[in-house]
Length: 384
Image (cartoon, rainbow, N blue to C red):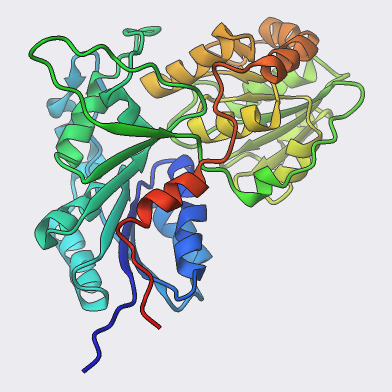
């Protein structure tokens, strides 16, 4: 009997927000479409399960299984296990759900040649059980090795490090994506630091092939509110601020936006997350107002678009917004504010010039080519 030499990959993708999904999608597509194609099982939940399930619905080499991941609450001291125990979404049968997913993966691929995880720990458990190589690809792993200010606007990254230790106690390789350069933390005597390889952010073809044609009057603004967690301001509040600037055109992308919202602000057009017109607006907008997620800020810096960053109360978002504001690539403010917005729109040319002139801070190129080469150490092509 001829041994099956088709590469077998298990891919775990965090289901909170869209950043993890769109970081992994170009990588998964590469191996799913390469000749000969790999057999891929995806572990997902929440947004990753629904989005990737739909995307690969008709792909014969890719299947997706639903897993359940506890939500670990963070605080200034690290992980808050008492608050974690009280979270209503943690009251489910994790063992039954995850064992069913592992059984399906076992039947489809058995021991994988490689397990890749973007902040999704059930795939890592499968790797440990099968003694298979594990590579983590995320943005949080940079906190294992980088020199970062803490606390930052009341947020710390201790909880991020603790989650990484809890989810992925060992890995053959840890990769971190970043749109900015990461200074290595000095290692003191008696301390250890993780070996983390930093790559530029993964960018889709929709971004790298986008032709920018900014509106000539400088007054088209893309507004994006993440669904990762509540923003703290209602869409109605945002619409009221937009209405106070009738000469500016706003395009608001969010989740569960009332279709009647534009009636209160004639200069505001609303869209739901995933609307394909996003790229059309991105091509011609003059600036972006957004929560400070890694994905969109990476795309903005690649395209040279200034950002008004309104970070969610997470260290990752605070750090992203800090890089934007400290280097003149835009501004950071904890909320959508009329005066700050007016100043940002006025200064868009100055911020755009700072992005264009930078040669030391930003990592602007797409990182997937280097990441794919790194992953191919474990994924050998099938013999003809």
